Image (cartoon, helix red, strand yellow):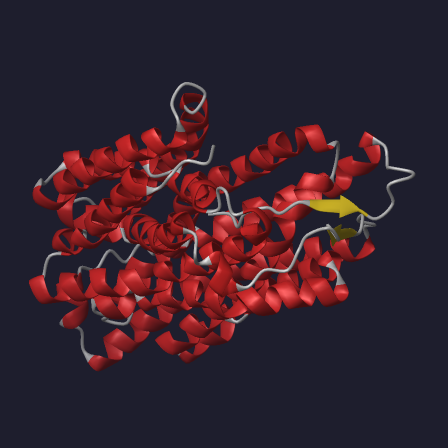
Length: 426
């Protein structure tokens, strides 16, 4: 997902740079969309990998998502303060630095062979991502003419979708080992054999995250030596109190709906590999390829949904898509075999428009309270940390991860209620 952009003005309005001067900065900023999309979509590979290696329950493995999305909640206010105080370029540099450090922390995490250190490394990475996402969206909007700002933002976000397609496939190739042990075989290992197995499984994570860390540091160096335009908030904007913003029914509904939607997205995509291994009886590497296609479906869904919005109001389209997602989730829960894979890929396609649509409807008509409302809806991303814990708990209690997908089913029902009750701005 991408944090929403806000409107900013270039500092130097008298001598605007030429389009050629914008090109390299735009390439750099767009690369950030790819990198945070890539690392987010490694989570579906990490969850089953670490689950098996450390003999985790589904609830314990869901702490991967908790570590990532709680960082967004924790960093929401500090990231904004950082960029107001020292500027957006500084924010990007700090974000990349945290991203790189977190990637390199996978090395000591693998050496210690302790699950908690992997969670710590993911938290540091996610703190960096939260800062980057807060900065990158507004930067894209000012790197060129104002009339093409939305086009540039959608173009940059498409690389996030490309990463969602590639990350599970690449991650499976370099993180999943060829040991091929089942959970029962791992449980039956002697202490010495298990220790050697954990060492090998933990070490397989080192390479991909070390390479990622090196790339991020190189991008960081490029940002340090690249001149980027300064941006500032519109001085005409009035101050707004949270209590005043929350008087708007659309915003209250939007916060709730976004909390549940992000929870649904994380549940569906992060547990995709684990889910289809159980429901369709395929191995993890084959499941990871399907996870890549789920990411591709998510990306295509954004484009198709945007096209449909030319003919249908966004509120009505969200209503239809939420119903389809509920029906497909029911198929995923109660069916078996390959149809469950296609059902989840379908869910990925139809839920793709939900984050930006809920956001835009939630802040519709807020006027001077728009920025405050935007921040509150962004903080609702914490749903991605909380709701996967319930999925993991249900899966452990029922001994069936398919039943855990009752959680995203409920989430899509909440999105349906939002679409039914929200008032579209005039």
